[in-house]
Image (cartoon, rainbow, N blue to C red; front, side, top):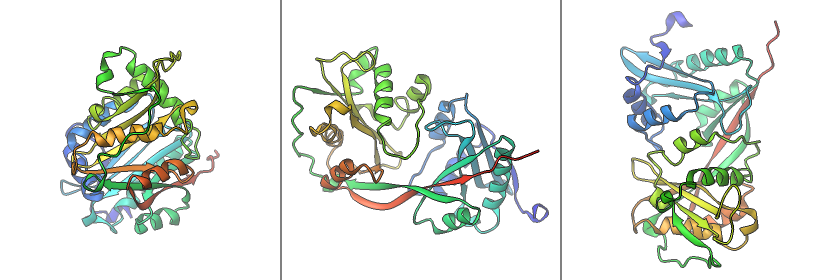
Length: 325
């Protein structure tokens, strides 16, 4: 097989490959385009304590494929990895994806990998066939919702905050403990996200780089909810928050939205989401968000706000048997 290849595999070379990588990823997934600048920043923000291996496929000086595998920093186990493969639309069905897959799988097997994970849209029939043929199983699904601010009621009243106050994350930059408190609050909220996984807490430095300092993060459109009567040892007065990110192509993405358990059932998560959405201008772009099927309350809230459900994103896993000598 390798003797008949018309392409070569090699490791990613940084920073010179970032422009080609951005073009390839944007072409293979035009729904979520990226820029070379974003890739370089995200690369620098990756936790260097974790394993990562990236491989590219080239033909006559043109990048036609990318494969990457790394530890899962959201659900870390030394034997659990996640990965993805992207092949340029003009170069599919030529064995590029299979070559990348086989090479990366060999690397992980040599490391004693026991579980691999990836995400695909349920409409990606060729990708699903490729993985299912190799023993991957669908284990989870995530709903995607979108709304255009042209059709969103920007003047909808906020639910009663009951004496609590909303502040943008940008305005809270004057709080020297903001980053630490948000990091702890995020971890508290994240443990209640129903994603059928045992989560791990990212280190503070990595979390700040990957979240608050991400260039797509709009701190002026992201909000925290504060209860000034509370001074929790970890969270201080912070009892909830929501984030809004802006993709270079124009759409927005709602990230974490939630409040601490004792503040739930009062419409406060809706108030956070509404405050963030209303900080945009009418017609300012499309907003996207994701929810897991068990999160019935948030799904109902999104639908009530006018979000329309799109095809699901599927999590697939491959279980590997430990290799014996």
